[in-house]
Each structure stands twice: as structure tokens, then as C-alpha cells.
Image 1 (tube, rainbow, N blue to C red):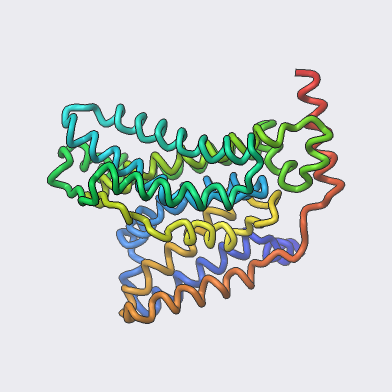
Image 2: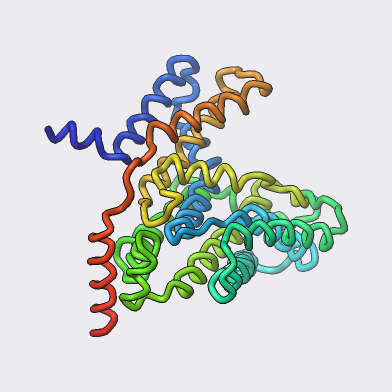
Length: 334
């Protein structure tokens, strides 16, 4: 009975699917399941891990952020330009700059959504184009390569901590921070309440606008961090970096059980959704799948995973209302 309940749990089922997928690929190409290969998969998927969590926070409030990849690209370009202009600037300062600038870009989205009431998908579709256009203006349409960046700028994402790539370490830290936020803070629980039943949450004293502003700013800050890491790791910055990556991020959220309707999602599920896509993307070249077939197969696998992991039900409205009332009562006594 306990095993049956375990298998019925969404995250457990998705974990088994990922393990089965890795095992099946390993039978075809044993090199894929070596420790070095698995570390490579985790490293390559680190950006997707972090951005999927950022997107999940927005989706929990019934929003969606289509500008995360454009934010990443813009901050990455700014970081590269700063590195070229000030080669002696400490890496810590560049990281702080990237997070701050990304957060400001996200705050623009949040302000337009929360204060003016424009739907998030409309706002971020507009800022997506604006941010891409700003990249072109800043660089004059030119590409910046590793020759324009100082060695320390390029070296940071390639370092290890006790044998673990720094990108994986950062992704772990971001994941733990999101887990703590969503599960052990009033603010995090409020995101679920807002997404599950905005009207009830509002009557219980939860500020919907503040929640929306926060999640967009948070998503922007994570995108900014990934912007520096992406450009420094690959040693190139240009207008179309991560073009279309926002769709991959949304797919990872949906595969991981994050409901587009809001109010449903978990950190483990989102990470598993990202890992699933990371395994698929890294495995297809290893098993010698033609590039012409890779997009078709990836799309078919994503669709199949979404169908398998689709959640037919919505969160319990009474439970959401009880959670909202609990949050309101705690706020009154704090």
C-alpha cells in the first residue's frame, strides 16, 4: 500500500521516469551514465534548474514571465561590457551588478503587473522585445567574445568546490533558498494562497499586488545571475543569446507539475522537470540522433511527459481558504 501511494505521488513518479530514461539511454550508450557524464548533465542543466524555479514562483501567482531569457541576455551583455571596460573589477562586484540589474528589470515587469493591472503575459511579451532591442543598442549589433572578457570573468563558472562544479553548487544553493521560502515563510505560503484563490486571499488580507511585484523581481534577479554565468561560461554575448529558452523553462515547469492555473507546484517537482529536459537534450547527441530529428523527438517527449504528469484536479479551495486565514491571523499577531 505504501509503495502504491509512493508511485501515485507526482514527484516520485517523475523521478522514476527520469531514472528509467537514464537507464534506457545507458543501455544504448553506456558512456552517458558515467560519473563525468552525469556531472556534465547537471552542469549543463544548472541554468534551467534556477530559471525553472524562478518561473515557478511567477506561475504560482497565476502569472507567467516570458522575459526571463531576454533579461538573461541583456544582463549577460552588460556584464561582458563592464568586464571589457573595467578588467580589474572583482568578480563579486560583477555578480552583485548582475543580480541587481536583473532584479530591476524584473521589478519593471512587477510594477506594470501589480500597479497598472496589465496581465503578466502581455507585460513580459513587451519587455522581452524591449530587452532584446536594448542589447542591440548597447553593443551596436556586435558580438563580444572571450577576447573581450578578462580571464577571471571567464574562469569563475569553470571552478570547482570539492570536485563539484560551481554552477551545480550555485543551483543547489538557489534550490535550497526557494525550498525554504516556499515551505517555511509566510510570504512563500501566501504565493500558494494567492494562486489557489486570489479573491479569498485578498479578503484575508494578503496583498496580491505585493506578491506579484515580489515574484517578478525575484525572477529577474535569478535571470540576472544566470546572465553573467551564461556569458562567462560560454565566452560569448550577443543579441540572440538564449533565444526561445523561456519556452523550455515553461515546459520544465509544466512537466514538473507546476499548474499554469496557479497555486500548485513544488521545488522538487520543478527540479525534476528541468532534469528531465536536461537528460533528453544531452542524451540525443550521445546516441547519435540526427540534429534534424532532435527537435521533433524533444517536442514529442515533452508532450508525452506533460500528458503523463498532467494534473486533472485543482487545489482544494477550502484548504486554500484555511491557509489564507491562517496567514492573515499570523500577520495580525506579528
